[in-house]
Length: 498
Image: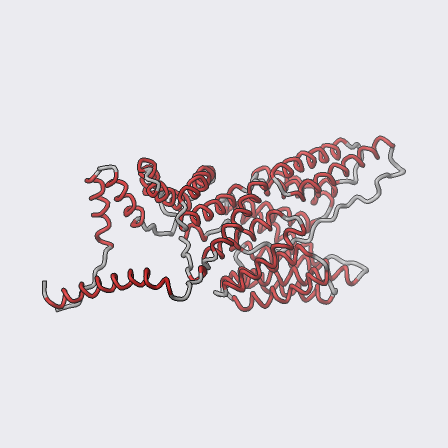
């Protein structure tokens, strides 16, 4: 070996020796803060099922139409049926507010009971109440992941809104159908639903008249806002921005604080999608006082959560964590388990990345508990996967194992190539650490067969590296050598030239 290369290799060896010595002798020096170490999350753990991770802007709800419980012009028997249908609806709304999978299932049963009651009536004039009931049932079915059934419920609502002459509500039902079709990977049908909804709004929404100027302005602002949402769904971001700004101006003129805050949230969301981080933050900051003044705490929780993601996108991790923590008690106060679970997951994910591992474990355990209660299996997989990875990273394979095994079972019910491969890889490493080599082999070999997501490349090197160790432990030397041969082209060794 020539002298220059020898000196170079000797320097590397000595550097390794000195670094290992520092690890021992440095113990008497200043203590190293636990949060000095940041964990780099693999891509499959940073993905999310939420749209761009933004919490949705609030939709202004369809009012429940019925007020008087009795109508003197109808028989006592009919009035009792109307009362029963409204009572079932109110009970369903209460159960839906609980948020657990059991309560959501009971809410659907009560909505259906209310629908049956309305349909059994031999009198007309209650189409709008029936439409509201179908709409709420559609939202609840979607919460439970029953998207095909939800489309059916929204389509029933659409027909009833059309029959009652409320074209704007008809358009919004079509938009709900379009979003579900999009999530079911039916792009052509979704586009048709969005286009039809926008056409209905354009033809009918802005021609509405009212003797009350404030009501007219708020109504027209709502139409402009809904048109903006449809433009955004169709990828027409600049047109959506202009419509949201016009809606905000009308709501300002009508002195409608909730409307202004709703428009500002939408402007913040679309600005973030356009990578305009500072502008997005400005819009969300402007929305906060309107939510406070109006007393709308759910809107306040949504905005704090979105501010957290904006800060995170801009690299201000500590500020993002503070925003998520501000949102958390508000979600808890309003009893929104889904919002609370999402925020706990975000706190755990960001805490993991910042090296605040004890806090992250606590938040993720809460996210897992809440997502089990709400029955959100896709979201539960995310929290389980991250919690399992965190235990694995902390050197606790026995704790990671059952969590990752549960995540794997759920992921197989909701296929997703990149995430499936990620869980299999993590489980393979856990099994290897626990010397469960046959299980490790099975997981890692299956991981290699999972194709990458469309448009994504797949780095097989970490898997091959662990698999080579597994084959060696099992005495399968030829298979181990094959893994190492596949790894060699990726190795880089830069030596000084003579």
